[in-house]
Image (cartoon, one colour):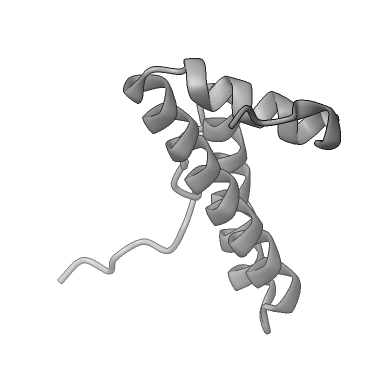
Length: 90
Protein backbone atom coordinates (compact mmCIF):
# COMPACT_ATOMS: atom_id res chain seq x y z
CA UNK A 1 0.00 0.00 0.00
CA UNK A 2 1.35 3.41 -1.00
CA UNK A 3 0.52 6.40 1.19
CA UNK A 4 -1.25 9.23 -0.65
CA UNK A 5 0.47 12.49 0.33
CA UNK A 6 -2.03 14.61 -1.61
CA UNK A 7 -4.60 14.31 1.18
CA UNK A 8 -2.26 15.82 3.77
CA UNK A 9 -1.80 19.49 4.48
CA UNK A 10 1.50 21.08 3.49
CA UNK A 11 2.68 21.11 7.09
CA UNK A 12 1.95 17.40 7.57
CA UNK A 13 3.70 16.54 4.29
CA UNK A 14 6.75 18.52 5.36
CA UNK A 15 6.78 16.88 8.78
CA UNK A 16 6.52 13.34 7.33
CA UNK A 17 9.23 13.85 4.73
CA UNK A 18 11.54 15.58 7.23
CA UNK A 19 11.11 12.76 9.73
CA UNK A 20 11.91 10.18 7.07
CA UNK A 21 15.14 11.90 6.02
CA UNK A 22 16.51 13.25 9.31
CA UNK A 23 19.17 11.48 11.30
CA UNK A 24 18.82 10.57 15.00
CA UNK A 25 21.09 13.51 15.91
CA UNK A 26 18.88 15.94 14.01
CA UNK A 27 15.76 14.55 15.69
CA UNK A 28 17.42 14.87 19.11
CA UNK A 29 18.32 18.49 18.40
CA UNK A 30 14.77 19.19 17.25
CA UNK A 31 13.45 17.61 20.43
CA UNK A 32 15.78 19.78 22.53
CA UNK A 33 14.58 22.91 20.72
CA UNK A 34 10.97 21.91 21.39
CA UNK A 35 11.83 21.42 25.07
CA UNK A 36 13.35 24.92 25.21
CA UNK A 37 10.23 26.39 23.60
CA UNK A 38 8.00 24.57 26.06
CA UNK A 39 10.02 25.84 29.02
CA UNK A 40 9.99 29.37 27.62
CA UNK A 41 6.20 29.30 27.26
CA UNK A 42 5.81 27.96 30.80
CA UNK A 43 8.05 30.67 32.30
CA UNK A 44 6.21 33.33 30.27
CA UNK A 45 2.93 32.03 31.70
CA UNK A 46 4.38 32.08 35.22
CA UNK A 47 5.59 35.65 34.69
CA UNK A 48 2.06 36.68 33.72
CA UNK A 49 0.47 35.20 36.84
CA UNK A 50 3.26 36.04 39.32
CA UNK A 51 2.16 37.75 42.51
CA UNK A 52 5.20 40.00 42.85
CA UNK A 53 7.25 42.05 40.42
CA UNK A 54 10.40 40.28 41.54
CA UNK A 55 8.96 36.86 40.70
CA UNK A 56 7.63 38.12 37.37
CA UNK A 57 11.02 39.58 36.44
CA UNK A 58 12.77 36.35 37.43
CA UNK A 59 10.39 34.23 35.32
CA UNK A 60 10.66 36.64 32.38
CA UNK A 61 14.47 36.32 32.42
CA UNK A 62 14.19 32.54 32.30
CA UNK A 63 11.64 32.75 29.47
CA UNK A 64 13.98 35.02 27.48
CA UNK A 65 16.90 32.67 28.13
CA UNK A 66 14.99 29.62 26.90
CA UNK A 67 13.71 31.45 23.80
CA UNK A 68 17.30 32.41 22.98
CA UNK A 69 18.37 28.78 23.37
CA UNK A 70 15.52 27.62 21.13
CA UNK A 71 16.54 30.11 18.45
CA UNK A 72 20.18 29.05 18.70
CA UNK A 73 21.36 32.39 20.10
CA UNK A 74 23.69 32.75 23.03
CA UNK A 75 21.54 33.38 26.11
CA UNK A 76 22.30 36.42 28.21
CA UNK A 77 23.99 35.62 31.50
CA UNK A 78 22.40 36.66 34.75
CA UNK A 79 24.14 39.64 36.31
CA UNK A 80 23.98 40.10 40.08
CA UNK A 81 22.41 43.41 41.10
CA UNK A 82 24.95 46.16 41.60
CA UNK A 83 25.20 48.04 44.84
CA UNK A 84 23.07 45.75 46.97
CA UNK A 85 23.06 45.62 50.74
CA UNK A 86 26.45 45.32 52.38
CA UNK A 87 27.29 43.16 55.34
CA UNK A 88 27.99 45.04 58.55
CA UNK A 89 31.47 44.55 59.91
CA UNK A 90 31.74 42.96 63.33
